Structure formats: C-alpha cells, structure tokens
Image 1 (cartoon, one colour):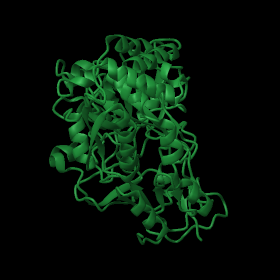
Image 2 (cartoon, helix red, strand yellow):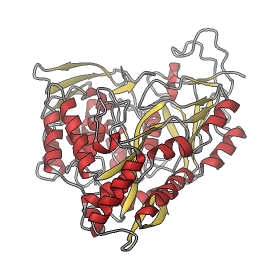
Image 3 (spheres, one colour):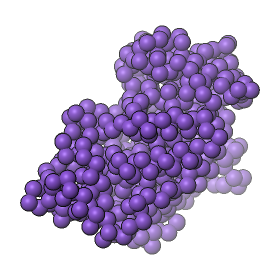
Image 4 (cartoon, one colour):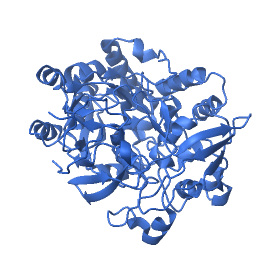
Amino acid sequence: MLGSAAPVLAQSSHVPEGTKLAANQTFTYWMQDDLKTLDPDLNTSKDGNDVLHQLFEGLYDQDAEGNLVPALATSFDVSDDKMTYTFHLREGAKWSNGDPVTAQDFVYAWQRLANPNTASDYAWYMELMQVKNAHDVIAGEKPLTDLGVKAIDDMTLEVQLETPIPYFRQMLVNSSTFPVPQKVVEKFGSEWTKPENMVSNGAYNLKSWKIGESIELVKSDSYWDAANTTLTDLKFVPITDLNQALTRYEAGELDFVQTPAGQYPRLKDEYPDQAFAPPRSCSYSYIFNVGDSGPEALKDVRVRKALSYAINRDIIVDKILKGGQKPAYSWTHWATAGFTMPETDYSTMTQDERMAKAKELLKEAGYGPENPLKLRLMYNTSSDHKKLAIAVQQFWKPLGIDVTLENYEWKVYLEKQQQHDFDISRYGWCADYNEPSTYLDVLTSWSDQDVGEWKDPAYDALLKDSKTAADPQADYTKAEQILAEQMPLAPVYHYSLPMLLNSQIKGYPFENVELNWYAKNMYRTAK
C-alpha cells in the first residue's frame, strides 16, 4: 500500500461530520489491462477514462447518481435554437504548473482531437457531439479554425453545433473533451504524458507509470478544490488474471477488484459488506468482420445469424458469470436512460428454437458438419474472456463450425481490431454518456469504432434522423431491429459490475449507471 499521512479533512464536503478518517488516505484500484495512453485525445478505453478523470477535469463531472455537476463550467447559456452553447469557466482553476486554465485550452484540445494528423480513434466523438464542421475538419477538407469551438475570452468558451441535441452537455463528461496544455504538448510531443513532463488540471497529478506494473497518482495542491480532496494517493494496478487479482485483494494489496466469473455468489456470502453488483452501462458482444479482409462466409447474413442464435446467453450469465449480468438480444444496455428494449425475432424464441434455426440458416448458406466452416475468434487476454470464448466455441461445435481461439494482450488486440485483422472479435462497449445513441452510433458508417466494417444506409439514416427527432426512441427501436436483421455483431450480455470494495473506502457511485467515479469525492475511514 502507498504510504502518505493525510491531514484530517473534516471540512471536506463529502465526508460526513464525525467520520473518523484513516491516517493513510490511499486507494488501490485494479485494472484489467495496462493503458495504451494517458493522452485525453488518444484514449479509447473505460479504464483510461477512469484514470483521466482523476488527472484532468473538463466542463462537467457527475455526481453519485450520474447527474451533471459543474466542474470547469460554472454556468452556461444556450441560444434559442439550441445550437450555440456559451460556457462560463471557473475562475482560479490552474494547471499543475501554476498556469491558469483558459477557454483556449479547450479550443486547442478539441481542434487537436479533430486534427487528422493526431489520428485519434475518438475524433468521431466531435461529430457525435454535432460540433459545427467537425466532419469536414476531421476529413481534412476544412481548417482546424473552422471547427465550431472558440474562446470569446479566457473565461468564456463558445461551441456551435450543426444540430441541437438534448444530451450535448452529458457528452462533455468523456475524457476526450478535456482540455490539454498546449505549450507542454508542443514542447514534448508524444512524450508529454511521461511523469516527468505531464502537466494536468485535475485533483491528482501523475507520480509514476511503470508499464505493466502500476500507475501512481498523488493529490494536486494546485487543484481549485484541493481543500475538499481527501484521498491523497491513488494506485492503478493492471492484472489480466482475475483470480490472481482476487488473491491480491484478499491479501490486502488492492482496495477494489472485479470478481472472477462464477465467484460472485460465494464472495457475496463471504464478504457481505464488500461485495456489490451494480448495473454497468456496457455491452459484451462478438463482432463479425464483414469487410474486405474478413472471411467470405461472414458476408452472408445467414451465417452471422446462425452464429448469434447458437450462443446460449442464459448459460453464460447464469452458469458462467453469475454476477448480475443480463442476456443481450439488443446492443443498447437495458439500463440506458430513455431506452425501451425492442422485441426482436430471436429474443422471443427458446434456445432450442434458436439452435434449430441456426442449423437451418447455416445449411441454407452451404455449411454444416459435411462442409465445416473454419473461423478465428479473437479476444484480449483475460481469464473471463477465455472462459466465454471456450463456451462459444462449444456452442458452435454442433453447427459443424471449427473455431480457433486467438488471444492477445490489450494493445495488440486493439491494433488488430483497428486494422480489421480478425474474423470474429470480442467487442465490448461502455457508454460515453447515458443515452442510447452512445451504443447505436458505434455501428454507423462514420464511426471510427466500426471495426467490423458493416455499413447500412437505412441504419445510418435512422441515426441521423434521431438527432433531430422530438422522440428518438422510434428511431432507436428501428435501428435495433436492423441490427437483429443484419447481425453485424452478436450481442451476448449486458454488464453489471460484480466487485469487491474495501469497506473502509466510501463514496463510490453505485447509483451511476456509467460508474464514472472521482477519487476526489471518496475517502478512507479508520478501521
């Protein structure tokens, strides 16, 4: 454990009066994989977002229920047509080098995200936010200065949209919208995120990053609300083997860990005050490569449907995972705000009916035990992902499908996905904001995350229409039905987060379906 004596911070707004704080205000957090980057404009992962929420601060944070709370935007104005937002920034906010945080820092960061030379896999997020000219800027067809974001003065940021969207401000919680320090980035280039170079504006600063071992953060004295920040030291530890991670938790080396597949019921009995399984807005699937580099068989929708139908989702959630997950027959997570789960053909079948239909479809496509189909299934290294891949391999065996399992470390796995170097890949998506389009936009033709290269003009049209619809749910329902008909991916389950959390750690946001957490709102009590 990290050792740093913490002052008594009874004045902290999030610590109830009379609480006895631990002298050691540390929090050690398990991660599935080491991070690919600590650059807000380049990050694509949920774990990365969790770390960046501590190092940086954007216009808004979320409270324990997922509601927006002011961060650097203390107030805002919006035009009558809902297409121009003016954010008034917090006076006194500073970078860790003492420089003031200004509106220009946001302009630089957003332009950098959209800049084709940055080659960010999250550039498309500017388009999703409907920022004016984002599409043309990202395509290199207009200059960065045409992007609809500008600094009116140091404390006033103006954003112009192409189309009004009611959830625009919710999207500003994602780390890709955070400011970055221009002079530091320009001085150090790709090395600006090294501990000796990094300048950040969040409640914590980067102390060390030992690749494959740990990322350590320390409380920032320059943060505008440092007086109300109780935890002083954070440590993020990547461990791909969940059983090993559990062992280290039980040895007191970790304060948080996800429970291994199948073990949550036992651990809930053993640690009733430490085991939780809140809904988590993420969906687990297997995505099919239907592009030029994919196998010919997967271009046949009958094959894709057969593969999806044959997956026994009840066995996966009830017999393998056992942690509060739910079977998925739609891509959008069931707990997403404003979403009604649509009924699809295969969601109403029994598993026996789905399997019979799978065999029928595969036979129609010319495959079966007499003409076996050979496919590769890729997943990132994890004991849980391996268990599920083995199960799916067995579900597909009666169809006469020969599946080779391929596992890769996180960075290689991501590279292979982006290069479309796979047949079928484990594909998880966690909500960037609490609204259905965060899932559905991923599979549009303009998405940088469409690694399976599936494209459908009718689907694209629905998602474009949803941006201006008075009630977009009808478009979302039709979009999900297209996914069920075309099956570019096979939804498997909707996440919960079966976890163990040290009972001394308080302030974790269990009611926030995105499970965005901020260490500045947490604290450690005395034993």
